[in-house]
Amino acid sequence: MGSKGGQAARESWRDRDIALAFVASGAPEAQLALQRLERFYGAREPDSADVIVALGGDGMMLQTLHRSLDSGKPIYGMNRGSIGFLMNEFREDGLIERIREAERSIVHPLIMRVTDGMDIVTEARAFNEVSLLRQTHQAAKLEIAVDGNVRLAELIADGLLLATPTGSTAYNLSANGPILPLNAPLMALTPISAFRPRRWRGALLPDTVRVSIRALEAEKRPVSAVADHVEIRDAREIDIHMDHAVELTMLHDPGHGLDERILREQFGA
Image (cartoon, rainbow, N blue to C red; front, top):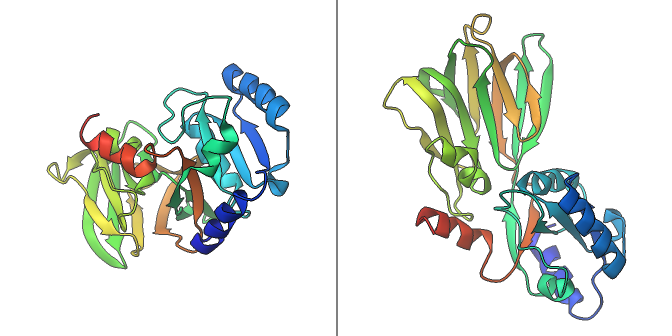
């Protein structure tokens, strides 16, 4: 849903009831919340709802984003999982009012296009990051190009990831990558346990560039390519760019939006 469409939807919510569709992870806490909320607020299919309410952890939010690619429905998550960085606090009461007052965060996915050892081409999207990971005890050897220009002829490492601002506080942060403000037009390219060049800490790239990665000595050093929940084994050539034509909306309670959470994360709050 584009920004104009989202504004129109929000204005219309002030004049009528909001139709909610609830989706939940398989966790017992999420399933119990699903039953109680549907009993109280009603149950709609996502296609006929104004807002999708996701119950679970961050994994459930990512799954819901992927399922909503075509519809563009805004998503309001409530934490019934473990970490829940992307989720709101769980409460059963006042849900309609919370959604009416929610702040909006617009996110774009990465598109990963992979050619494997059988010359099969697979395309997948990622809202957090695309990761390249060694498959065996052998370190990966990777060539990195940006917009067709080779910038690093050989990276020897456990892997490499390209993260969106939304995903910069997830696996990227654990790999000592930088935290990106949500509205920053950037992507974080971060090595995982780099061996050579040992001092290379990655790069900040404009979100308009195309990153191409080639697995070197791929027979000896096989690499997996992972876009959120999609994994391709024996990846040989990987092409990644941000899809600005697709934008999805996450809803957060006032004062607890992604921008605020990312700022808190940077200051250790």
